[in-house]
Length: 401
Image (cartoon, rainbow, N blue to C red; front, top):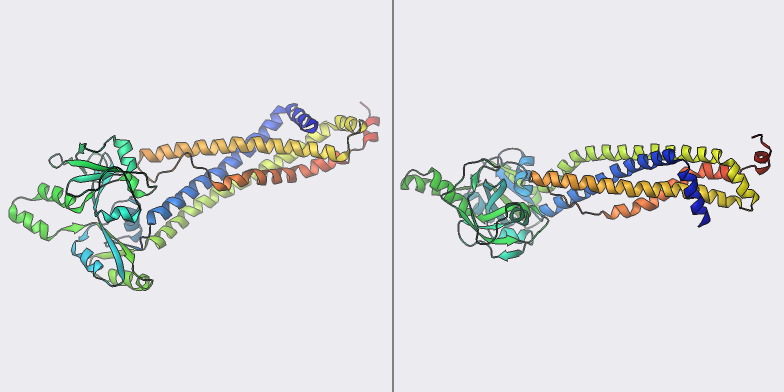
């Protein structure tokens, strides 16, 4: 305990140098920890949203856009596909299950998605209040939608045309909230879910001029996307090729497209991780220089300690203790900064209804930071500690003052 107290007093004697070392190391820890916190959450969100979806079928266009709009609900769809496509897919022997989706409207910027109640089972969702929809214009709100809009079971709302705020409001066809989902950690949290017929009813009533026009619209009904689960691994090789050969249809593999997306994002992640690692190494070099200068400045004190009976290894331990103190303080400051930055990013993304992040998320990787930091501190302190151990007491006492 005396050694730790002396180590602290030696550091406090040079607050500027010690503070600079702490600050530089904290920036390095913050950069590395922030990348870890964000990347792990994004990876988990992606895996959660995939939820066993093997294929997304949409209109001809970019597979990446189809995947982002159909699985993550972060982009606009490429168009619509005929309703008959759903039945055709269900008749395919390679297909185990199909979930149709209809997009196009929103409530206060949150997407309204028409589907079937089995879509809730895809994510293992459960109701926090109310019941599933059973008829057109009944809606079940995701947890984030209910929180942001303040809507609850029994309330009514009008959908707006388009997938963002500011579209034409369908006031003549209000929805009634019949259920609110418990948080799932998936895309469902950001959706207002309703029956497919709700979407058709709203738009057919808005555009139909007479009964014959309405009848034509009923015959030409469409959906936006279809989510598909394979029956066997053979489907992965055959079904996408068959779908792409159909007129107006495009298949997108969520696994392949999300892997491609993460690879593109991964380049920036690796740059940030490299920057943080470089900052840590340069900070450790600064710590080494600070400790070396401290040993040189305190040679008289070290000699006095030796004369009072302190063993050489005790001097080395004291120098190592100073380095551990600096690293521990910098790690606490760096992790606090990383979690603060995560909270700001999560708030910013929530305001834009994008991929949500948990501001209170704690990564298991962070538990390794302290032992790694201590190991690096001991490496940085090895040279100064060796110099302290090799202090020539006689030479120091004979040196002119």
